[in-house]
Length: 126
Image 1 (tube, rainbow, N blue to C red):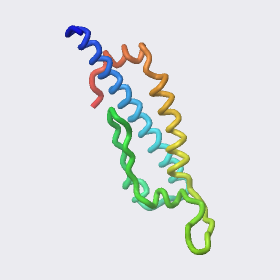
Image 2: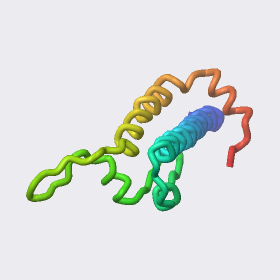
Image 3: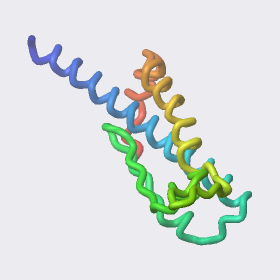
C-alpha cells in the first residue's frame, strides 16, 4: 500500500468519525429537548432535573450522565416490603430508547456518498 492509498483510507475513517460525532450531537440535542418538554409540561420545578444532566458527544458515542432521581421518577413500582404503585413519568427510558432506534438507523444508513462529500467540505464543527 502506497502513501496515497493510505491517505485515502485515513480520510474515509476521519469522515466516518465526523459523521458519528455529528449524529451523536443531534441525538443529544433531541433527547434534551424531549426531556425538557415533558418535564416542563408535567410540573417538574426542581432545577436539579434540568441542570444536573449532561451530554457528551464524541467520535465513539454519546455519554449521558444524570441523577438517580431521573431514573426513580421513571419507575412504576417501588421495591418496598409492600410493593406500591406510583405515577411514572417517562423522562428516561422511553425517551432514550425512542431516540436509540433513530441513532442506529442514521449510523447504519446515513453515511452515504452525499454525506461524505458534505463532510469533506465542512470544517470541524467545534
